[in-house]
Image (tube, rainbow, N blue to C red; front, side, top):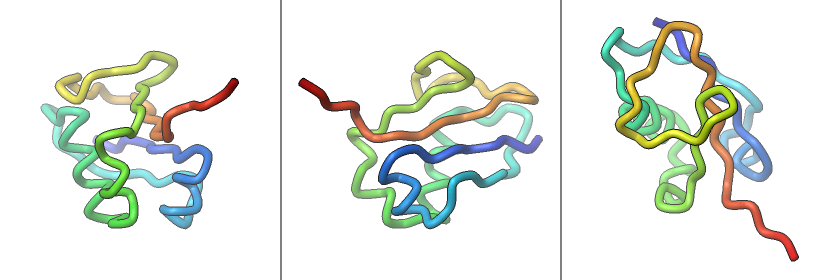
Length: 81
């Protein structure tokens, strides 16, 4: 299945693109997809521990099992005051 990944904030700059579509197996976990993204865009690896991950409008754990049509968003922690 094909999963669309969207990068937000400075992750867009690190990846050099706003979106990418990646293939993964029917039993693909979110963590496996994130690893695939980091392999393709190595600059994102250093942000691994602080990366926020959402599927649709909900934050998800890396053990989430991706479904056809899911859209993944990756972004840095939000800071504000």
